[in-house]
Image (cartoon, rainbow, N blue to C red; front, side, top):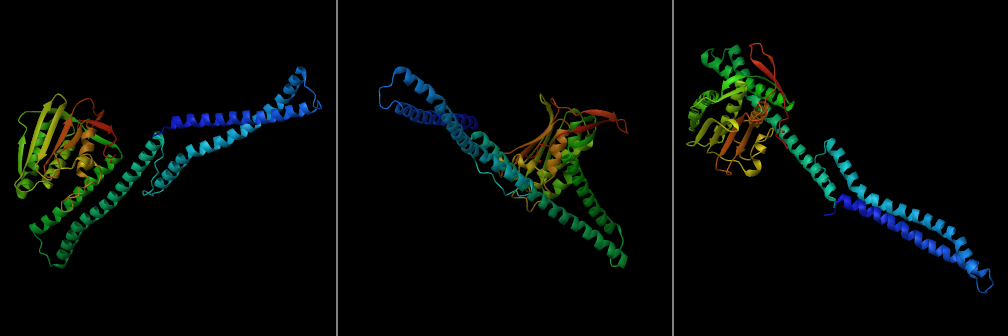
Length: 383
């Protein structure tokens, strides 16, 4: 593949060569004609050396003038041709980017032969694909959120109408049903609010000295009834304290989201293993399941906003739990990563806290705990 640098060099050489050739050719032609005319004035007699020298001197300016004019015209034509060959791909890139900015995510840039321009075209095409995928997932999220809101609202509305009409008997069971649906709506609103703040790349953390092992055990015990109901085992290995400086509520949210994801993808009779420890890199929590696994190309995509795997049509969730979890982990200066041997072979998620990145602490909060106003860019996309 040619490079833009080589093409620019070649175009300059072509322009120069065309100009020189035109100069020489026209100069020789005009000079020859001028000398022939001067020789004709001698009436066929032999031209003396002085006369020949004078004829050459008289013809040279005329030949150079006409040759220079022809060289400039030829060079201009060659330069125009070369510039169109180079500027054409740039114009296509510009036109495509304007179309993509206008919402036409199907637009693609043809791949030019120059390596540099081909790289730009590939980046623009990749950007269009990601934007199209993001837009499709946003539309799907709206549909899913609407569906999830409709069910609890219908339940609450129907129950309240029944209570008003006297069809439904008031009692603890009725109130519990309404409270459960209201809690479901509240969780949905909280998830969407957290995701919105994550997309804005700002989040406030109430930092304090906490034990990551205790947070891990508490999060596991909170979800243990759901694991038992689904027939999935839950083993926790966090025997020693793992002190960290973190927002306990946010880290618990990370652990609950990842544990919930592991439960959703674990078949009955399998087991999820949770472990908290500290190594040279810092504090870490690993959550390993024996579930559906993750394809290699999806190991990063599972953290993208609104991404749900091909097998997720019959699973609960909105495709934002892992996105929120990774964003919160990175807000603490850590990370959340995934690894899997492939589909059907389970997956392991690792939460790491510590290392070189640290949240920035600010003023103390109302309860005396330091508050970190953290700004970060969620690397969920190329989300």
